[in-house]
Image 1 (cartoon, rainbow, N blue to C red):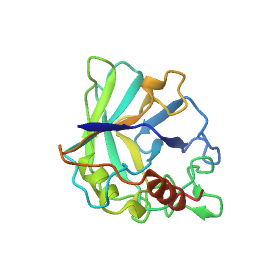
Image 2 (image 1 turned 180 degrees about the horizontal axis):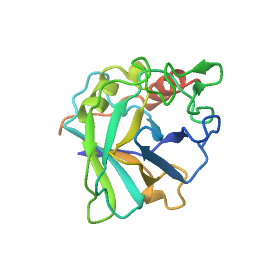
Image 3 (image 1 turned 180 degrees about the vertical axis):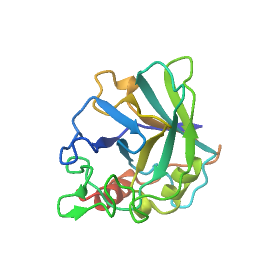
Image 4 (image 1 turned 90 degrees about the horizontal axis):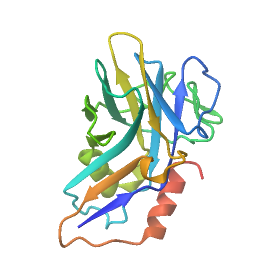
Length: 200
């Protein structure tokens, strides 16, 4: 008993081009240390508020390079509203700057929640983000998405398929495992919460 969440938006923010928006790119650039970050939004799962999920896996497709040797992909919860079509290294959305450039301030992102240092044989990176998604189910008004950062001792970059990638099956998605007795809730209400959180 599980569901897949593919609806959403993403963008990367890039310190080398701090005023540019990258929400239409087919590739999410994640570079470290603190050079470029990937930002993702997913609608809250269509479950009753407070329902328990067994597991939530973020699945992303690695485009370049072929592995994660020498780097660690990190996942952080975002704590404030941002608009994919407007966000840059400096701003969350028009008229609202990040507390610290790169969404690095304590009011921008929360504590590290998950990491990945390996790629599966099929070319996908799978990261357990169960606590984050459970929080979205418990309170969908706190769903501001997530931030991907790259931990590395030297300058390094990876490219991930974005939600604009030409092959739909390579786009980011959440794979959520549900208890056998779980039920779906009103998707219209959930969609409205998602829109309200993100300025749409």
